[in-house]
Amino acid sequence: MVLAGPEVPAGKYAAEALARQGVTVKPRSLEDNVKGVVNKVALGSADAGIVYATDVPAAGDKVEGVEIPSDQNVTATYPIAVVKASKNQQLAQAWVDYVASGQGQAFLKDAGFLPPE
Image (cartoon, rainbow, N blue to C red; front, top):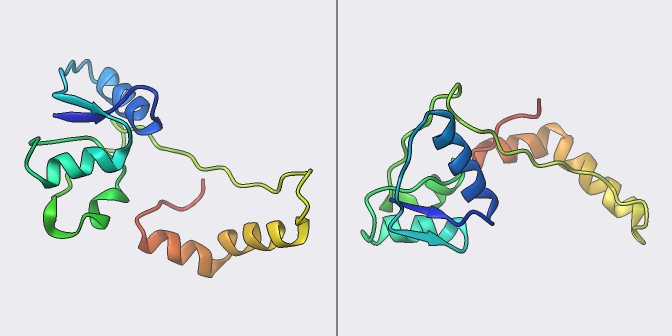
């Protein structure tokens, strides 16, 4: 088992999901980022790791994902907003509008992201 380190969002989410179930693990290593976790599993240096659902398809056929049931999982959130101090307000708003649009949401869905709540 490998995990992302506790200072990495994926590591925090994994620790929270494990704690919710009362599961204690002793990872072989704590990686600097989620890609490191995927790479260790893909290379056979670890049998398992906890990563974002979107990282599994990105690894191709080198790894196989097992979904964590929603009542045991921790959902990552990704807020989006235009920064008031932005020098490119119109462009920033256009980006937010695109991400929120049907086309943007379809792209995110194809990449494995859940729809906004």
